[in-house]
Length: 315
Image (cartoon, rainbow, N blue to C red):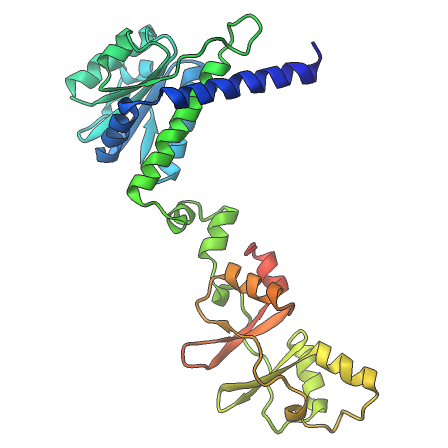
């Protein structure tokens, strides 16, 4: 079998197993979501490959609004059980349901009246019988040609963990803004949190409506291709490097010309407090490289440049 054929077989086998798990979902899944939604914190545990999947599930829950901690079942019996407190729930992962390292933790959780959600391939097993809710993670075969290495089974367990996390975030009304708040260093966090005032530049130079184009050229150089004309603090118009280029191409005697005859009187503007990502979309939609930033009273507070927004990760 070629490498590509082997990969295709693995992906198809695991895909069918995940779909089969979806078909088997029952009231146990709804019960699991209820238990997790009612908990202040979730403990996730497992051994070996199931443990590795459990760590990912704990991380996904935490990042989507359900605080969760990974707990090694052996360490739990040597002091780490201190993580377990009231108003908690536990997710235990075990393919066979007979993982001996979990038995001590199961007993300890029972003593503390912590409900267990079992993700297992054996509902009628020691861990399955101890659980308040069971998610059926059984598979017909592993993708491993010897049917030994955990492959299909861990994929199904991971998918069920993702299903729990998504159902919980929907139950809790977890929003994009909530996700961004928990991921401020990521691209999505920047897109959903970064505001134009964090990127805009203050006006170094500006023009009055009676200024000449000779004055405008100086301001264009200082302001990176955009000259803002203000009258009593409010925006009267803008002149861009593009406007200057068109004047030069026409061969007009423009130096003594007044800015009022050249400026765009109702330019595109960006509101102070606007999301930087929204500003990027507006600038790109109107095919402009910069725009004045106005506060709620219509006062010009600065200029925001598309290049600065992109460099800040707003797109």
